[in-house]
Structures are given as structure tokens and as C-alpha cells.
Image 1 (tube, rainbow, N blue to C red):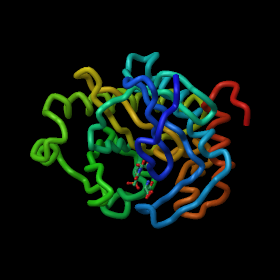
Image 2 (cartoon, helix red, strand yellow):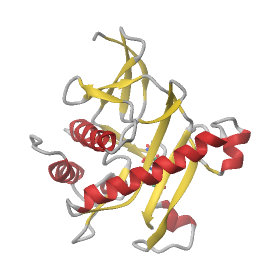
Image 3 (spheres, protein in one colour):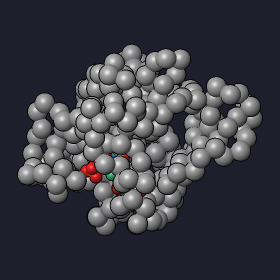
Image 4 (cartoon, rainbow, N blue to C red):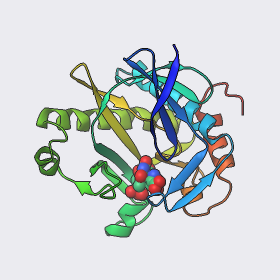
Length: 238
Ligand code: TMP
Ligand code: ASP
């Protein structure tokens, strides 16, 4: 496979074309941002840890019957993925109240949310990823009714699989963000599942081991990501 020009460069990843129109290369970079890009930084090895964490979790999901865009690793920070048409919805799954939920609604940080809450945001930097409902998603033509139902069902199944895997590694999953794509008429999981897109809390101490360390200056981001990689990725070189 031959890596070609960059198709798109986001805040933390760059996507490259390849000589195969069905395949893309997703590079996990060390840059990170928060608050719509207002806060920026670089963290050594962040791309490596996030790539390996995503690889491990995509593989786990595939083994449990979830279709994802993941193919293989080209290098420690580059993932070969299927080309998909991204659905412009960010799906947030919440198990424990944290972050913006506690700022905008009367939930207290740490409160258990049972059943889990699924939130759809319109994926748009221009509009600041506003929360939408099914009617708005349909009116904007973001997805069909059947696709929205499928996305909800898959998100809940992914949530259950991740919660169990992480609990065995002494990690809580308060919330996380997923993106889906269309491939050959089917909805598949895309993007990444990493410390940038999930909240991970140590089950014993409640310590944040994710991007909140950067968002809210809670300490050493690289140490937090390394700790998650150590617990999640079998045999990883740290
Ligand atoms: P929030 O509490 O800031 O709304 O974040 C909810 C979850 O979504 C959290 O696990 C982090 C993740 N997230 C992203 O992956 N990308 C984003 O742009 C934002 C705002 C949150
Ligand atoms: N990814 C978003 C940004 O860069 C927000 C966040 O994750 O907090 O601004």
C-alpha cells in the first residue's frame, strides 16, 4: 500500500489517501486541543498511545460482532482503515455524569446514569457541535430513521462491551464519543476510541486518566495516557 497526499488534517489526526481507493491511512498525532481549539498543546507519545488504545478497542469490538473501519496498523501511529462516508453526528454515551452534562444540566459529577444517556451532536466546527435530536438529524438529512436507530443500538452495545473490558482493568467509563460511517450501505464504527475521546477514571481513586488532565490542568497528561495504555493494550511497549 502506498501512502499518498493528506485528505484532511484535524486537531489530532491526519487522514491520507492511498493507492487503494477503498483504504485510507489515519495518523494519530501528538497535538491536542480542547474547548473548540482554544487550548492547544503537544504531548510526546500521545499519538502512539491513542493509536494502540484505539487498535485494541476496535479489535475487541470486532471480536464481539461490531463492524468497524479498522484494518491494520501500518506503523505505531498509523492505522489503515476502510474509506467510509462519515455520518455528521457525534454520538456521546454517558454512564456517569461528568463534563458538560454537569455544567448545562442539574447532574452532579459522579452521579450514576442508569440507563445510560445517548446524546447526538451535530458534527460541525462552524456551529460548535450543538446537541440535536432525531427530528433535527432527519430534517438536516444527516441520517435516515433506520440509520439513527441502528446507531443508537450499536452505541449501547459498544458501551456494554467497553464497560466490561475496562472494569476488568480497574477503569470506569463515565462517557465517550463515537462516530459512525457508511460503507456499502451499512453503518460501521469509524474515527477512534482513545484517551482523547473517552473519560476514563481509575475505579479505586476516581483519578482522571484522559484528556480532562489537559482540559483542566490536572497533572501529567502523558503519564495518564501511558497508564491507560498499560492497562488496556496487552504487551504494549511503554
Ligand atoms: P463533554 O462532557 O465535554 O461534553 O464530553 C463528553 C465526552 O465526549 C467526553 O468523553 C469527551 C468526548 N468529547 C470528544 O470526543 N470530542 C469533543 O469535541 C468533546 C467536546 C467531547
Ligand atoms: N476536541 C475538541 C477541541 O479541540 C473539544 C474537546 O475535546 O474538549 O476543541
